[in-house]
Image (cartoon, rainbow over all chains, first blue to last red; front, side, top):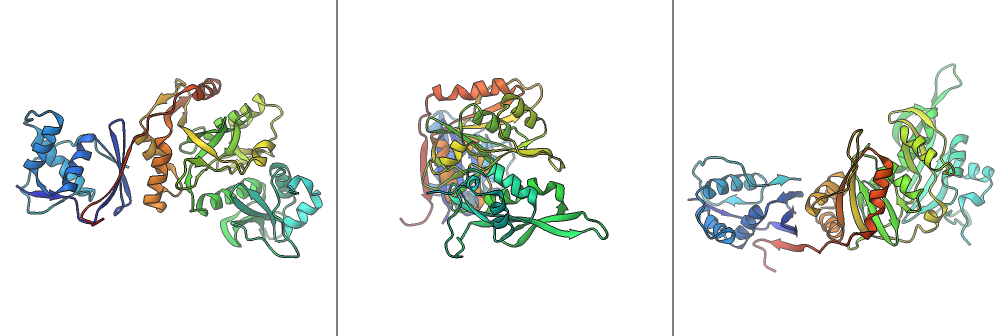
Length: 108
Length: 325
């Protein structure tokens, strides 16, 4: 199970209004519009590196407390997208996983 | 005592524009306007008549933010007709163009300088008007109707802060005035003229890349109050289209930030300062889309805005990962 983290040295400027998150990433100069789910994932990985499983558990507890069978797949797709944007990175070789639609993540 | 362009005889305006240029004060900027074309002397005397002239003693030249000129470039062989060129600080910024387009090109040369030079401010692409100390920002793409709405609101008594550019000093939620002439295109010229027969509009220039254009003279009161900033209160994205139902639609501040940043002139260049400035601005504002096809209905909707309560502030955080505090 790969471990993910926010690249060390990353600087994020956050704003949140009514559940919508905007993130300015100093390293890329890009501004991103994020769902609460994506924002929470970045926040967790900013606190400490986590495996996908641990990240799913953390977010699952945040949102419902109930296991969601589709969450690992959704999380994998989200992490791949966030990695493409330079917001997170994988610390170990990761196994290929199925892609699916990330939740509400856009690029400015 | 302040000397304004209108206080000078035309012959003196012409002499100064023909020479090193006429230095005027426009809100936070000093700009030097020059030309050897008599039609531009007339246009500057009319459209910039209320602007203060920067005092220059004993031949000492004031240091201006930029020096804008439109001068003859070259003549067709055997013809009395010549083309003209736009210069900023002595450098050609527009290739030679027909003399009949001199006025809009002069204004576009000034726009180019205003949009690109003062990077100590965040420069939104927007028209800005003020009433009761509160600023209404009309942001959006070219052709969205910003200038038409700006002109119409000004002619209904709102103070003109600026057309085309919203000037925000970082660390504030204020808009600085830059009350230059309002650029009107095509049908909006007649629309404004019909609504306000007393409006002072400069000469029409047909056949430009934007069609027929003309400029509304900024009201005297707006120019005389060009050092009074206004607090940002509303951010509206107008979008003109035939058949649109005219209605103010609230949008999230997050989406408003992305859109205003995308349309701004120097948001990316300012980096984190640009983000924080825009985010602070958006934090205190109610944000709306305004699709419209009916100018009267759009104006009524905008004039109802002062009755709306300000939004709750959001949350802000700067996070540096793996960096010791």
